[in-house]
Amino acid sequence: MNTMTAVSATPRLRWYKGNLHCHTYTSDGRAFPEQALARYREAGYDFCAITNHNRLGHETDFWRQVADGDTDMAYQVSRRNFDIYRASCPWAEIRDTDGATEVRVQPLDVVRARVVSDEQAPYYAAGNTAPMHPKFASAWTQPYRLPGA
Image (cartoon, rainbow, N blue to C red; front, side, top):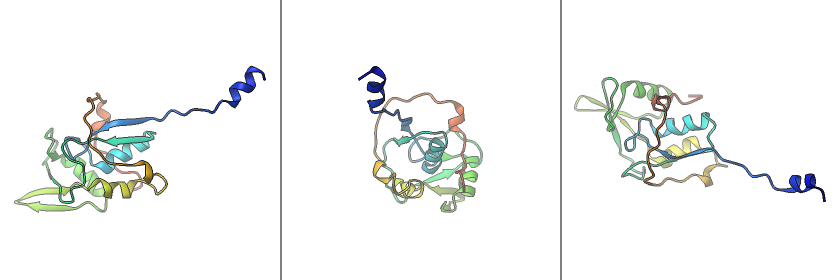
């Protein structure tokens, strides 16, 4: 057997591109879970782990207040991101509480059912982790419209 035959007979390994640390509005992130997953998928990632703090993402009655403009407050959704989410997600739930607009953050199992194909479903799970924070470019913190919506 020559060297060329040995190399071609070796199984080809594959690298997967992914993010193991992504926060959403479920904790202190700056995007809805649907937006974060769609953004990474469109950027060519094979996987994205949603790693929110203090919540597993299964709450069915979790609401965030919508700010009047931009905000750096983790507990508020910027008006711009809210407008994009509402326009691109027909399932967005909105309510008025004491004069303040609030939007429901969907549970992760509901999000998963909307953005993950049946073939991919066995590979997706929700959990809670505490890895170190990476530094991302500001482009990743901008509001994002879901493709095809």
